[in-house]
Each structure stands twice: as structure tokens, then as C-alpha cells.
Length: 208
Image: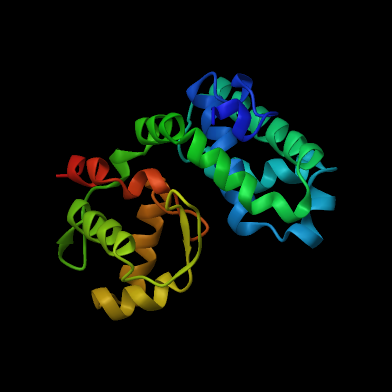
């Protein structure tokens, strides 16, 4: 089955640049994990300004050029409109999963190019930030953190990351807060969502 056959309405216009790819991918992840389909979609799909406020803070973690950010947000809005028009409510999860699977290499390449590695510096609780981030990613990948819903490619939402950072890492509240902010600014976890690309071994190894 080709990419076009998987989700016929999803065209190249959604992934023709890194900016558009990231806007589309983050929109899909926010939909999959942080939108209540039966109550939220009717509002979000008719209020693009509201949808922009839902996705822009997280797209902006990865894109800092104003023109690229505008392109990304526009792509995220087009994606939501097309998704709602073309997809039955009972198929929402399956279609997002199919899209991530079919276009994963494109999503992964764009995402990993724009992870904010400069945020992964310093020390927390006496350990280096890169070492802690590597450990965190491995722990998520090996299910040491409790997960909620998970896509076929491995994108997931954590159930109680703060409590489990206390338990697994012996962090204080301040340590946990700093670490979660670091993960967010780096683009590794936002809204408790961990995108599949950052769980790839190649990314972990690149952190040193």
C-alpha cells in the first residue's frame, strides 16, 4: 500500500518543507493525545485562532524563524480542516496512526533536525543534563514510565511523569520542574507527549 492509498487526502503540501512537516506532525500529535474528540473537535475545527493557540507554543519550541513558524502553523490549520472533513470520528486514532506510519521517515528527519539540543546543557541533581536526558529516553522506551495511549510508531503520552521522576530519579520537586522544563524546551516532551523520533536509538546515541 502506498502512502497515498493509506490516507488519500494527505498530499505533499503537508510535508513539502521542514516547517510544514513539523506543523502537521505536532498538530497530529496534539490531536491524538490532547484533544477530546467528541467534545473539543466541533469547536476547534471551526475556530482556527483557538487551534493556533493550542499548537503554536509547541511548534515554536522547534522553529524560531518567524516565516517558518507561520508556514508551520498554517500547515497545522490546513491539516485539522482536512482531517475533520475527510475522517469519520470513529477513525480518528487509526488515521493519525496510519499517517505517522506512512510518513514516519519524513516526520522523524524533520523533527530530529530541529530538536533544540542547546537546551540540553548543565547539571540537575548533580548529573549532567545529556546523561539524564539519555536515561529518560531509554526509560520511556523500555516502559519504566507509565504510558497512556501509544501510536504504532511509538509516540506516547506519559501518565504521571512528575511522580515517577521523584520515584525513579530521586528528584526533588525543584529538580523535577527543571528537568521537565529542559525536556520541553528541547522538544523531547511537551504536554507529557513524547514523539517517537526522540525515542530512536540514533538520537540517544547522538547525545553522547
